[in-house]
Image (tube, rainbow, N blue to C red):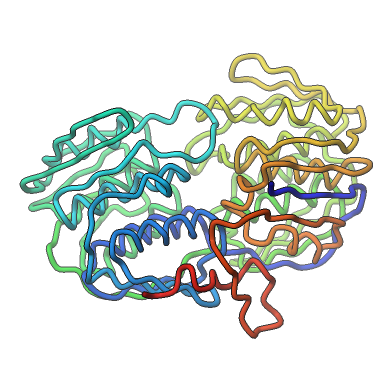
Length: 447
């Protein structure tokens, strides 16, 4: 079983580089299926979700190579259009391959996706959007069969700015005849990066960065090379850790332009923040201040993916804070694990009331999901004594070598990754590359 062990109570000092964005890379990998040629993505993090996606693409007939942060994909020889249940069931992001496969093959078979247990995450917006483009569906248990004689541009209005639905509709619409208008589209930075990649491949998408996207379809895609931005959620996690533990930390490769809501919350807690384009410095020399009220919201609001980490930090403040979770109701599952450490948290529907002031003490806890697991890491770093976090495969789905990054900042943390789905890891010859941030080894080399 994978686990992390932390001896807490140390302040964090130093500099660490931020990995490439998980939420940008995964839809970029799906987009590569549209191109009957070579696609190269740089700044790709070594995480389990990327590994799972590589295994899915291998099963579809793609030739994939990962080396030192660069992913090279040859989708010219696609041989299948059905996702393997074994890997599709492990990650939520597998659902975005539906739109790409429909665009490329006009038919696809997938399954209801797995991933984090953070509440209801229906795919009805994905399905309804694709239906308007001409896709028909057959549902048998968890199996989803999709077909389209042809894809035709349409007017699509999303009642909620779902990131996944926007991505799926985009991946199909760029291969449709005519023009598709997506209103109510998600505005997250990962959507902007996906649109930029699709435009580079030969599509024509306007309105990028707004909630209205105009997509002019094409049937001819070309090779491209793209670089993913730094991961804004990982960057926010490390900044939250510094706030909880006190100290001074510099992040390089951090997409500060995409992080304004997270930085604003850190400033509310009394942290001093200096930022440049891809560099953020946090100075936290006092206990964090409580925040009377914070509410998660779609971008550019405060991200739900940082809510659990914020909850952990506020446990070390000196007062009462309230968080409203407006996106995923299951995000508060982490509160019960924090309570095991001594936290005083009351859950009232979608509200969490954090009464701080009681010291947290290390104990054995379980990561229930990706971001909740990261929150437990923060709590363990700042708590008194030893914390053991079980089920850390959730954390490793999104954080590349988190233990090495935190060790670099002075934390006393070690990891047991357990049996890896990624096979043998080839760390390469660069001694400056942290283990866990390099190659996947033979299991995912080009065949």
